[in-house]
Amino acid sequence: MCVAATQAHFYQPMGISRGGSTGAYVAEQTMALPHHGYRATKPRARAAPPSGDPLLFEDTSAGVPPMNSQNYYESGYNIGGGAAAGGGQGAGGVNTLFTDPMANAAMMYGSSLANQGKDMVNKEISRFMSVNKLKYFFAVDTKYVMKKLMLLMFPYTHQDWEVRYHRDTPLTPRHDVNAPDLYIPTMAFITYILLAGMALGIQKRFSPEVLGLCASTALVWVVIEVLVMLLSLYLLTVHTDLSTFDLVAYSGYKYVGMIFTVLCGLLFGSDGYYVALAWSSCSLMFFIVRSLKMKILSSLSADSMGAGASAKPRFRLYITVASAAFQPIIIYWLTAHLVR
Image (cartoon, rainbow, N blue to C red; front, side, top):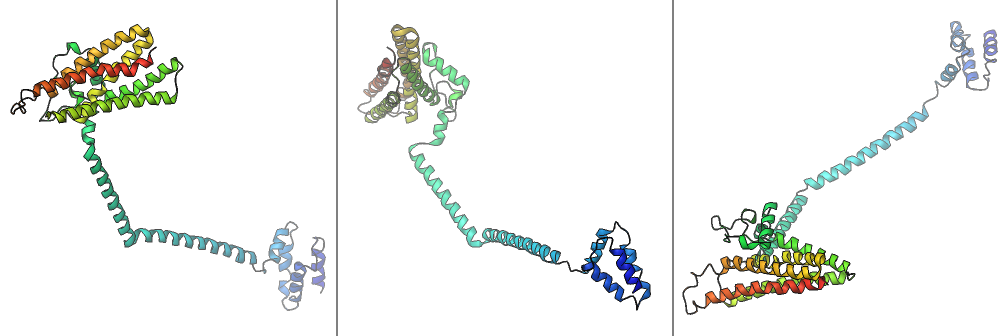
């Protein structure tokens, strides 16, 4: 009892209440003293240092089961495990989808349908327009474009007008300046529309409707000209290697002369416009006659027999001259309203 009183007197200045868990611990140790006298100093040695407050609390809570860690951390671990299990199930579902024979068969069937549809579209396009042949007319380079523009504006000094062939196939435009192309007509058409818009803007007559009418009119004239040429060749049974793309190219070269005419009209007035119109018209007529002559008038041997053999050369010449003479009329019709 004297030892218990001494121990209680020692813990009292530390501010530890006897009614708390520390008092219960001291009481338990005190009750054990009469039976084991050598244990009296053990709790005193643990709690003796004044700075051992955390040690006291750790000792007193040593017997308490870690409820917090058992409940909280285990639940968190279970949640993480559940999430991991859910992710595994999702990945397994995706893998099952791609390894399913029915899904693979459906994907293969869809790919075959898409390929069949693509082949059908390409076949229908090839019936009206050959993509490979269209690529031929755009096989140009800068050197060819410069030479062709000079030939269109100054054709009088050019000597060799024959289109060159390699193994019964005409050379591409980049290798033969006499070969027709669609690059220059396309770019010249776009440039003409832009120049027309600028001319209308300078005259304060610009509007989207007027510009659209100008573009559609220029395009319709080319279509009409090509259709008339095809109909004439068909009715006169003229056999030639001229294709529709060739006729479109020769008909589209007029846009180069139209650009030159409009520019001269804007820079030098009406006098400059008529001088440029005369020059570009004569140059284009000479170019068309010499180019179509090699296409239409060169193959007379195939049609030299028959009752109308003597008349066919004249008909071919008429077609060539008429197509050339028609160019100045179209140039004037499409450019006169832009220069005032």
